[in-house]
Length: 280
Image (cartoon, rainbow, N blue to C red; front, top):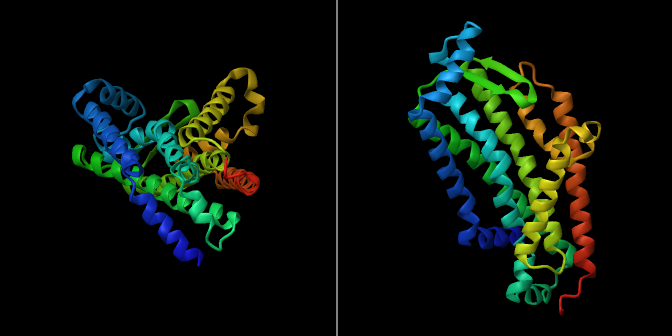
């Protein structure tokens, strides 16, 4: 029965126009930034200078893969949470706002099962959105730049790495897959607020506010020792995939912490939804 209910929730979710806003925004962002990279010489000249100082062939490493990674990072950090939270905040709050929640709960299903199915539908959307982000970036970059190796330059994380094309694409695929955990975390945060008696927009704004507050405090040098206590710190660990040697132990530790964080959000949301008075 959960399968059929989940299938119906997915049909309902992907039948809404706002579900596709994120996909369109990703495509527009990739196209805009990559066109700037393609026709404005400044950024590529800086990349070429850094590579040639270390004796690398700049023509080989300023490639579709390098540009895809350069765009993937800011889009994943800034745009992806917005559109995931937009959908996550809608999942239950929109049902209450439209007046369909009472009709759904009139059926022989528990509130816990309804919240769980909504979370599973949001999880599927999060995975699809994260994978679409990676695919769009690679596709648009391949239309504008030649094939070649990967030059990963992330000064804030102390990463300066070069890879051959095969290894570069493997790293890119792994990073895109790990991004699904980040998307699911933001979705779970928005869904938790959606379980309370709030409007969909309020659930989205609250989720983004907590996300940004955590990121702001984490980035402040005064709280450097407290960084591991913020969930946004562990959401940044997907970028460690581009280090010379992937720190799998640290990445898996961060993923396990995010799993526990998501489980906690789901439990809080289910409890709030269970005791919520849907008549008010």
